[in-house]
Amino acid sequence: MNKIAIVGFGGAGYNAAKEARSVDPEAIIDVYSDTNIGPYNPMLTTYYVKGAIPYEALFPFGPLEEIAKELNLHFHGNQPVTGLEPSEKALIFADGSRKQYDNILISTGASAVMPPIPGLDLPGVFKMRTAADAVALKKMLEAGKVGSCLVIGASWVGIKVVEDMVAYRVPCTLVDGAKWMFYVAAFEKTAKRAQQDLEAKGVPVYCEQMLDHIEREENGQLTAVMQNGRRFSADTVAVCIGVRMNVGFLKGSGIEMNRGVLVDKTMRTNYEGIYAAGDCCEALDIQSGTHRNIGVWFNANKQGQVAGANMAGRHMEFDANVLVNLAHYLDYDFISIGDISACKPEDEVYEYEDHKYYIRAVKNSEGIKCINMIGSAGSNGVVKNAFIKAIESKHAGLDIKTICFLREKGFPDSFIDYLGGTSID
Amino acid sequence: MKHVFVFDQDKCSACSACMMGCMDQNDIDLAAGDQCFRKTYDNEIALADGSTYCAYISAACMHCTDAPCIAACPVGCLSKDPETGFTVYDNTNCIGCKSCAMACPFGAPRYRASDGKMVKCDGCNERVKNGLKPACVCACSFGALTCVTEEEYKASGSNKACSALIDQLGLKKK
Figure 1 (cartoon, each protein chain N blue to C red):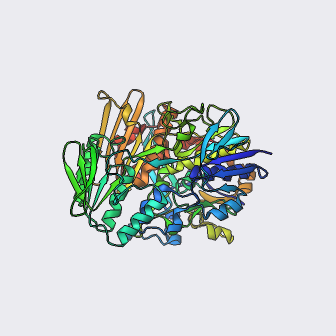
Figure 2 (tube, chains in turn green, cyan):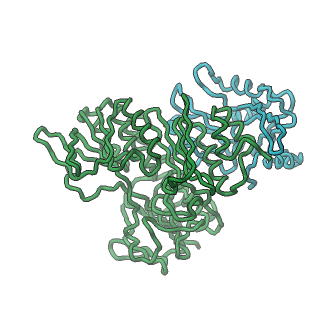
Figure 3 (cartoon, rainbow over the protein chains, first blue to last red):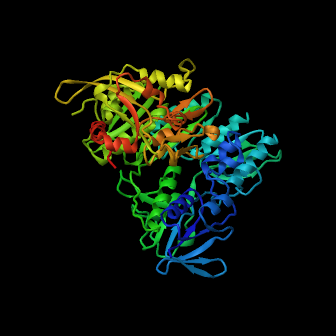
């Protein structure tokens, strides 16, 4: 009988359990979690805060008890795994005990980074990643205890915290250490435009502000003091400077890692029977051919499904992994498709703007490297698909339906040409 | 019993009757900014040999077997109806994040500005469950758009026509 362990129970862990159970009804599936709550989606936290969804909706797969019953899982809550012996396929626990399995999935996710900067432990300084973080912020906002907020980090989470503050009519300022907003995904010109548009909605943005420390003022406010000496004061400070993969317990185990666990297309690590999926892993990125963590909900779910199938004995592969960053906030849509870090000054730049869209893209003789678009949400999947197809088959061009779709959506022929051409064979 | 939409573009004149049927069935309010779930395209496309191809296409959700929108939805709004095989949704908890649109290679999900939620073609699931045809199929006077069970589809040999369409659309065969 196949004995499977799932370490960490978010979207990846849940989908692995679901797929493994559908393939192998007899398998023993043990789930270990460092919490006692069911799989939730960190992306939903800010939506819960602003009242867009009820608390239960944070848990898109339903209550833990129902999941465990339906999938016949042995759920071990509040039991973190502290080590792994991959050659033995054994998990190690805090009390020193160990347990062997036939297959193990590492799906421990990621946590909000709170660097050792003085003042980050002051009351009123918060992060946003877990359901508990969301509950605490919502409580504060609903109690009317927040008169102003400083958001540190123009990240995908940071911008959503800004949206929460705007929803509660709390004056908010956004600061970031990078040269411009969304630095890892946006071209400078795109970012400046996004900044201008955000400021027009009443949110001041300051870039190139590296945090030195946070201190409490005599009037009770918090002041974030930057390395350049600039000071930003507010009632609360949100620290949204990124995430760190939860892989510390694997250090020295022999599992190959960069920032996350390296996996192949089957989500297998460098050890037979040991898999990883979701925000804690780095899968193959088809654009660069290297390992990358692309931490989006879709990837977590699909990677978990693939790992679950393979652990249960049915071959499955995860493919078409490309860098995508999507930000939807304050009725504004920005997407970046592809690897901005691969762009060079000598590459060909495409830029287009009308009342509906802003597009900026870069390519060279090898193909398109990165596309930034503002206002294109309804067409993002079509453009992303064209981007992936161009990587998979360089001279494939666009299909008829894609050309028709993009034209109907108002994209110019120049962009359609840029993507692969208005002319077909 | 899984259902599939079969589109024969040789019979399509892009008259948009299917769109009208869809709008009527789903109470699409264009004046309020709603978008029809089904779209028709009447497009002249240049061919590599210098000639022009007149594309008449009717398109909506393809109801993919392994629909990426389902895995992409952060709140779990989307699912497969086990009876019809259609990709259906309950947008009660939809947050309007448009992740489904980013996952869909066909641009099928539509954002409804009036309530900030996503909507899409559900294959007229309730109609089909009750033995009726989807509204778009009913409206098609030329037989270009049909909806059949998977068994009927295989028995009819339409898979060849479908393969041709897939080839033409440049889609990946599973």
